[in-house]
Length: 326
Ligand SMILES: Nc1ncnc2c1ncn2[C@@H]1O[C@H](COP(=O)(O)OP(=O)(O)OP(=O)(O)O)[C@@H](O)[C@H]1O
Image 1 (cartoon, protein in one colour):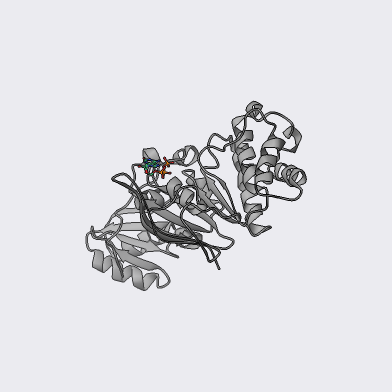
Image 2 (cartoon, rainbow, N blue to C red):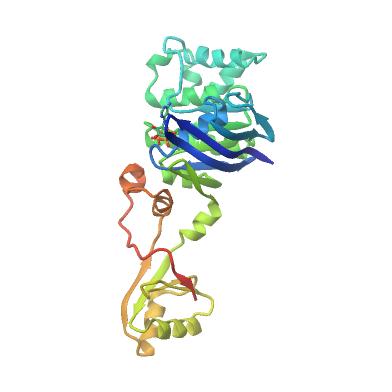
C-alpha cells in the first residue's frame, strides 16, 4: 500500500508557484529521499503532506485516506525546518507536551521511551535551551516519534550535526524503518548520507517532480563505465563487441564509446591495438551519486554539495545523454 500519495499537488504564494502539479508516491516501509535545490519546494511539499500548509490544489492521501487541505494525520510525526520546542522546559516535558496533545494515555512513559530511542535519556531533565544543536535535533526527532507514528517526515535532519551524531541519527532512521516498519520521508542535501539509507528517491526541480527512482536504479545508472575514443568508432565498436560479448556499448554523439560490464581497460586497449586501431583516449569514468542528482536537479554544485561529498576526489566527466545503445 502507498503510505503517501499526492496527486496534482500545487501551492502558490502570490504569483509564485512554489509547488506545481506534483504527483508522488511513497510506499509503506520506504525510506524516501527527497532531493532538490534550495527553494525548489521540498519543505512546502512536506508541510502540505503533514497538513501544516493548505494546498492551493491537488490531493494528499495518507494510507489511502484523503485529507482536506490543512488537516493533519495523527499517523505522521514530523520535524520540518527548525524543531519547535519550549526552551525553558526540560527535554522530557517538551516531548510530554506533544504526547499530551496527541492524547496518549501514558504520556510520561511514552515521552521517556521516545527520548531513550534518540539517545537523550540521560539529559531528559535538562532544559532544552541548554541542549547542543545535535541534542536539539534529536529532541525534535523524539517529539516526532512519540506516539509511534507510521510515517516520519524529516526535513534536513543532519543540519548542524557532527559526523558521529549524523551516523547515530542515520542508524536510528534505518532501525525505525527496518525494525518498526516506519515509512520515512526525508529531505536532505547530504546526498552521501541519503545514499546509505534511501530505498527510493524523488527529485524536485522548480516545484515539479522530475523523477522518482529506486535506489537500485540509481546504483545501476551511477555504475562506472569505460570511455574509448578512436578515429573509426564503428570499426572499434564491432571489434569490441566481438571480443567482449558480455559487455554493453553506447555510442555517444561525439563518437566516444561507453563500455560497461566486463571489459577491463587494459584488455580493451590490447584488443584494439592488436587490430591496429589507434586509441585516442581511454579512461574509466566513475559517476557518483552527487553528479547524478545534480544533473536531475539542474543545479550548480555549490548549492547542493554536501561537505563529505564535495571532499570526494575529482572525477573525469564524459559527454552525457543522447547516446545510442549499440
Ligand atoms: N510562506 C511563504 N511565502 C512566500 N513564499 C514562500 C513561502 N514559503 C515558501 N515560499 C517560496 O516557495 C519556494 C519553495 O520554498 P521551500 O522552502 O519549499 O523550498 P525548499 O526546497 O525547502 O528550500 P531549502 O532547501 O532552501 O529549504 C521558494 O521560492 C520560497 O521562497
